[in-house]
Image (tube, rainbow, N blue to C red; front, side, top):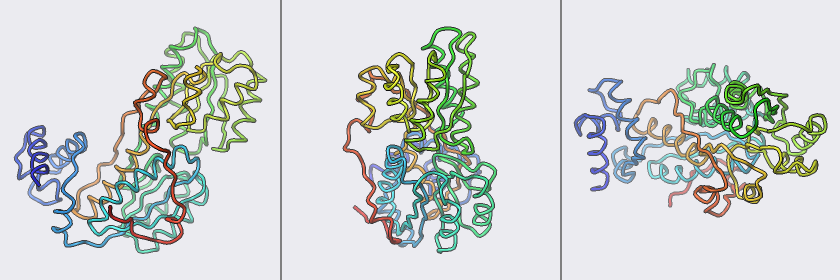
Length: 369
């Protein structure tokens, strides 16, 4: 409890408010302005403040609430990390009487409208969603919100919907950062290409737009040769990249804007271009390490998937237990991974997380530690 009080004192100091005001903001009580509440909650997130969950559990008298989760299983290099963040935070909020109904889809955008509709009619109080099909999901999200089922998107958005919040690394910034890096890595007048996932997905499209905008600004005379869609399928990504490199063997660089980079690495190797074409990838997993060390991957844009999963659960739990307002957006900062700082990232320092399929078969409460 002393640790929690120190955290509250620190928030009060940084937000320039009283301790009582911090307490009201953190527990969703009235008597303060909304802009003050948002400022306090933002400071709390920035310093990583986590309240004493045991004390909160007593204060809400073991409030019963359930959260539905609809996220992909594949590509597991990214989504296993997102799931691990959801489960880690879920174990903590289980002490508040919150249970989880996990309803995954196999790949991004596959049957997510059907699964979302099932969750919305299952009695959950909120839904955490990776929106692979934003147009199809929009009316379903709007209907859920009208019924009081709050929706938090994570990783990729349904921006035209009335969802309560989005937790992600801002995709356009993500692409702009990759475009600037590429512009500094390749010579003037270079042609480069983008290997995207699905351009009808908000995240992938905006990354592509950001890269296409930034690259020519940082590479005099540079041009985007083409954009190809791999649809998060390894075989399709390999075949399309292989064919691209056959048609354009003088490409100077490739930007892969999803985690699906291994088939692109293999296609470069098949053409004898590994290490010769600058390759900027997205995210990080253990199998990428040899490609960094051999100079095949030049850099990768890190999206903090574990942190995204944690934040999505924390926002939903805070609202369900204490009526804390949702921030419209939570944009995490992208990081740049290169061979020199590779060992600093959690994916290189912990055993690979494997999501247990048994958790997915039946609705179940996430167990407490």
